[in-house]
Amino acid sequence: MRPSLHPRHLRRVASTILLGLPTLGPISIAAAGADLDPAIREEAIVRTTGDPQLNAVLAAIADRFGDAVVLESIEGRNIHRIGFEPGPKDTDGEIHAFIEGLAPAGLAIWSEQNYEGRASEGRTDSLWLSGITNGPQSFGDQYAWDRIGTPAAHARGLGQGVLVAVLDTGIDATHPHLAGRLAGGGWNTILETDDTTDGTDGIDQDGDGRIDEMAGHGTFVAGIVRGAAPEAFILPVTVLDDDGIGDAFNVGQGFFHAIDRGAHVINASFGSTYQSAIIEDALDEAEARGIVVVAAAGNESVEDPAQYPGTSSNAIGVAAVRPDDVRAPFSNYHDKLDLAAPGDTINPRTDQRIVSSLPGNAWGSWEGTSFATAITSGAVAVVRSQRRHEIEGMPPAEVTDLLTGSLESTAVPIDAINPEFEGMLGAGRLDLGSAAALGPVATPAADLNGDGRVTGADFGRLLEGWGPRPGGHPADLDFSGVVDGIDLGLLFASWTG
Ligand SMILES: [Ca+2]
Ligand SMILES: [Ca+2]
Ligand SMILES: [Ca+2]
Ligand SMILES: [Ca+2]
Image 1 (tube, rainbow, N blue to C red):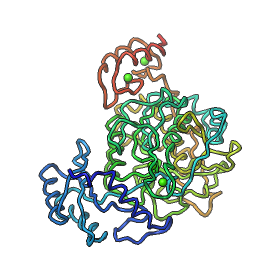
Image 2: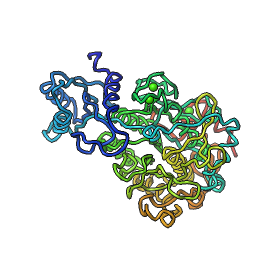
Image 3: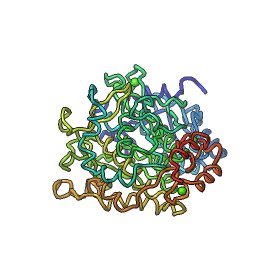
């Protein structure tokens, strides 16, 4: 592989393309369906039926552009990131047409250019305000919890036994708010390592003059998930750099990683205006396994261009509202969104704000559809914890219908107070208290047989699951990827006899 084709290099190239674009409104580039998010000129993503097709695709690209190499592959899916070097005379439109034409020519199942996507707050230069000194109290006092009814919901379910993957900038595992709640087996799809620290690299990847402006986004999102579902475990998957930028391949890779690690809920607080085949395939696979994907509407206060996966049919797309259920002034709206949830900060000095954890044992206030999304992911975890035993053996489609249906059917209608956005803010504002009232009271995570008690029968089940469980297992109580003595200790700690 040539060093010049390294993905980090290509991302910098893509960033300089971005510089020339206006920040809002449709951009006229040749690629159909592409608006805000630029295609990476030197990269294609293909899904093939196997190596013979892959070799044929590589030969075709090399024949057209002189060279083609596989930069990365997604295990078990025959999905590949391919690098090549178009010449200066190859226009964006020609590259796009050639790559998109590979599948119709019978060389791949699908083929597309690789596109950028962003943290929702990264598009609008929304920066967090840190320096909240009484963090834990401010966190508990923020309006969102009373608004969605967490006190009543938490009497019925806390997210126990549920794994929520947070696909984002990483998570600060040392923050006291998150200590002990992070699952093992996280992955950084950008660096290709298990380092999921929510750190900074000192490089302005997107060339906007702000360095590492989205560092902390993942820690903030994870903190909110924890507030809504205090006993859920959180799987950190890094798909965005510290300037808030990711590409379709890495995001897709993050989804597949979360699926393979046994996540039950996947939080996607980002979006792209390009509907990417790799991400749609990941969403299809998640749905086929009963995994609920929750995604942000976006923060541009527009209907069009819509953002994916927020407006994809198999994700819960979430808009943001103020404390009075009026649409947050930044929130996107669309008839393909599913729910609205608190996400606006009215006054950062009162409890009319969104508060969460930030790296370095800090707390801050922020606003955005990312955080309405995080609240909703936590809500899914709570209702799933209540139904943990009921859904065992249920067809996956019924699982996702039951969980999303319980949240959507109990949402508080808000069209009447948002008449200009009728039908565009989903089923209504999330009411987790009412949704949780539909299900039973969740039993302890260590109640593996669902009889409401933790006894020798559960101990027996734990022993049956003993050993490495990288794909997930109910007896892996701390979601470490292995059923071992730590899980045994957790089981005994909640023993009811
Ligand atoms: Ca930047
Ligand atoms: Ca950076
Ligand atoms: Ca039991
Ligand atoms: Ca374990």
